[in-house]
Amino acid sequence: MRDRHRLTQRELARRLGVTQNYIPALEAGTRNPGPKLRQALMQLFECDFEDLFQVVMVNPLDHQEQVLRPEREAEAM
Image (cartoon, rainbow, N blue to C red; front, side, top):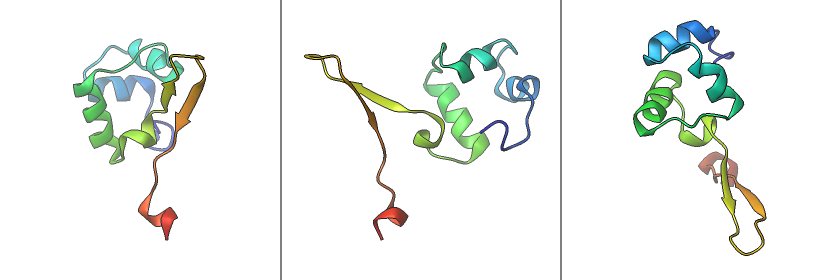
């Protein structure tokens, strides 16, 4: 999403008020943003949560992962 908006990691960090080192960790999935940062990202990029993050459910019995994909109204039509 950052690339689509033609932002450098430095510029995105500045706009979000985080350190420049946080952005590559966020993009690699080694850091998870808190609620305020998630909201700031969605507002900055004018998108939904699912457009930025992959939601995965893990079955506690067999530890199988399932990626949740949102149903879009446009896709349903």
